[in-house]
Image (cartoon, rainbow, N blue to C red; front, side):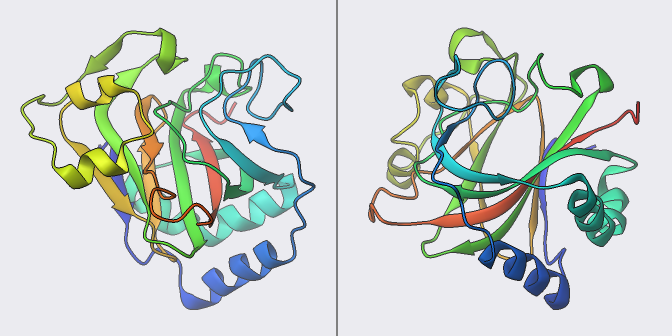
Length: 222
């Protein structure tokens, strides 16, 4: 099974429009989230946390999570097999995210075999990407050794360096970075123990924005 890839055109026009309409009705409360804090995936700034970037988020209710999952389940499971949604948010990125993983020991599904992070791009006013490496890590990436599962034989381009300028310099020793462009209607799939980041989508435009649905999934039902 592939560890990271994109499902092109996964959302039909009706489903995409529905998700974008839901997004348009959300009024973020102004709270900024620094993913990821300790002990959970969404604690406010007064919680102990490891800062990887800032976003505005609105948690998806269980009923709506089930509805969203029903809309994409067939397409996703054809690629990934049977997985289950644990948690989801509507997300607006405020600053670029540095390298991190989405499998955290304090998450409620950590003992249920964390599966894939699913990113459903909905809107962006700048060309942007999610970046993934053939590298796994325990949480937190900042204080752990990483396991490189791909080749390190890669020459970074100037464009790579620009898009990764917000990340730690150690990412340049991990081999090829895979840049998955954000296209509304696609679903970007990343194994939750694989290191990933956003690109530096604000490098040429400090007011750039991008919005998405983020879903965390697991392999075991309970």
